Image 1 (cartoon, one colour):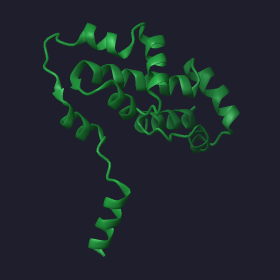
Image 2 (cartoon, one colour):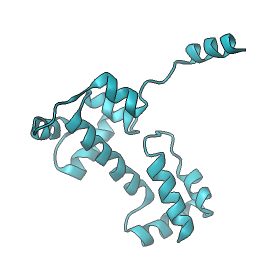
Image 3 (cartoon, rainbow, N blue to C red):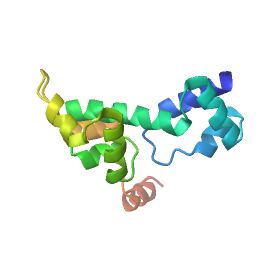
Length: 140
């Protein structure tokens, strides 16, 4: 059970990484991919993919309520690479599309955080490859 908790903690920590790999998480727990899926589902009631999707949707709900970001920006910030997949999974989980969810929940007390601050906080501003190369050349 300890290994499963460590793997779950890794998913909680790295939930926004679109490249979060099931094989790597399973190896972190010391399980094969398929044994990890079975053990995780037995322990937590859902597969690792379902668990990760739910964590991402919860974060997206929070961003839709509080940040002045587009649905596409939020989609990518929470680790989805496809807006269509994000919207479909979001609707399955909440019963509303991301836009419908925002319309229903925005304006209930708090002002929206400007998108630039939300992107900075969420790590959405990543340096481009040519910027990284230039910075490493200047440093060296």
